[in-house]
Length: 444
Image (tube, rainbow, N blue to C red; front, side, top):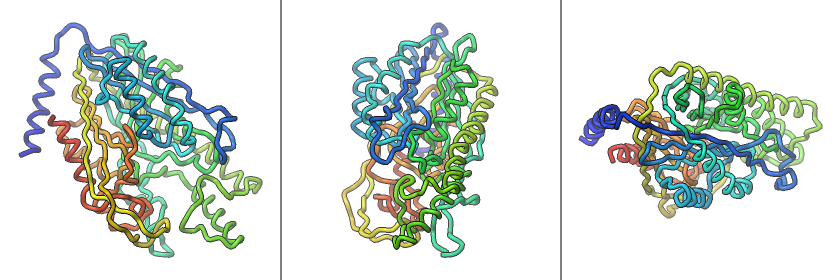
């Protein structure tokens, strides 16, 4: 009954969007990006320098009655205090409701945590500039496919235990969802693209980098002579790695061997970044150089697919309605009592319930669901399959950072992977809470 009601409402919304809006006026949109790269002398211990610049990118869309802000920040996560500071400022200064803001981390593992907290003013500046640059616009949606991601949970062929590696047969959504905004003359304004892949290919370099999200956005922007701003939206990548990740696995084996020679076993507990690697070793140096090349290659491949989808869009709308909703869902929590990265069952005790923030931003018949955590891919696939709207996507690591750790789908709790073992959620709640919660926001 509930799903039937949502479907009926979807039909009503589509009809209202196309017929009830006034035929004069229309949406306006603007976009901007601001450099948030920390200065070299501000880098914390462990960082060796800067590989490429990192940014806050923003789009502001106005339907004449309400505004929305889409923000993509080159950061590992969006801390709660950062999200609250940014959204409070946008609401008071620009009149953009907190419920209409999607503040998403690209989840690059190559930006210091401290720098993201220092970026509040620069993030606000990117939205302010996008707001100032609004002009009459039209919006379109399309999807493509990119094959640079892969499920990362496998059974190790030697130990027969769960471990991290490319599982080409595992669940993995290759969809690239694309929202394009352009001027009425056809001049590009911005593109917002959603893809499920961890930004970890440059993580062992210990250099500041936007990783593959940064190189993809830069490739798209370069293609349009920087007349466009390209925003990465983190899809459900909790269990998705880059397909081309060989260098990282090889470097891990080198580290395990080198530590073992010193009498230290790190085979089931990896030090962060490239800690312990001998960078003067020619093989290590070669693998790290290949990592730098790989994030450029992935940016080109994914960027080309984004551009192809943009060029294939035929139906563009000048009049849409904007609406945003948010809610908190709660699931039973747990605390792990033992340690170890993967391969063995964990020991747990009951803990306080974990709150998860859900969101939904509606741009006409485009539905962007939001979760403030790292979500397994099958959860997003289920949301899209159950949504009455064909144009549905899920933006994760958005609007704060839940204390849940990873959010596996229910069936994944039978796998002793590092994501499942480290999750602070008991099985049997979060998958349905997220999917049903976002569907409820659609019906609202």
